[in-house]
Length: 243
Image (tube, helix red, strand yellow):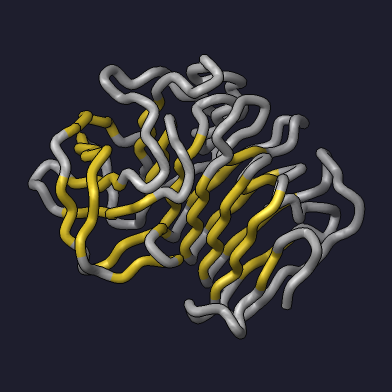
C-alpha cells in the first residue's frame, strides 16, 4: 500500500514485512487510534492528531524512515516493543530524529533493534521512568549550530570528539570485548546517533564512525542496517549505556 504521505507497506518492498517511509514528518501517524506496526501489518490510521491521546507503537516487522521533518514522530507517547526501527534524518534544526507529544509524553523502548541518525537538534531520548532496554547516544554539534536542542523526555549532552558526518559514512557499535552490536550506514548527514538492541546491557561501548562497509546486505540499497559486511574506519568514541 502506498499513500501521498510517503508510506509504503510490505508487499512489493524488497525486504519482507517492511514499511518504507519518505516525506516531511513522515512517521506522523499518531492520533487517538494510534499506529501499530507489527508482523505483516500495515499502518492503522487513527483520527485527528492529539498530544493528549495519540501514540505511535511498533511491535514487530521493519520500519525504515528517511525524514525531512521529524522522524519517528508521535503526537503522544512513542513505544517500541519489538521489530526493527531505523530512522535516517532529519538533518536540520526544528525537527528531531525521535519526537513525542508535549503533554508529559514518553519515548519507551522495551525490545527490538532501534537505530536513529540525524540532527542533534530537538533531541529526544528514551524516558528513564518507562524505558527498560539499554541504549547509547552520541551527540555532536549540528549543521545549524545546535547541540542537544530541546530536551524532550530525555536529552543528549555533547559527546567529546564526535562531529557531523556526511550521508553514507558508516558507523559500527561494539561492546567492551570488541564484538559487533550493529553496523549502520545512514542515508542522511548526521550529528546524533542512538542505538538500542536487546543484547545491550550496562557498561561501555565503542562507536566507530566515519567509516565504510564492504560486502554484506543492506536494508535499503547502500544504506541502513548491514549484516555480514566488513567495516573499516579509525574514528572512535566511548559511550556509556543508559536505561
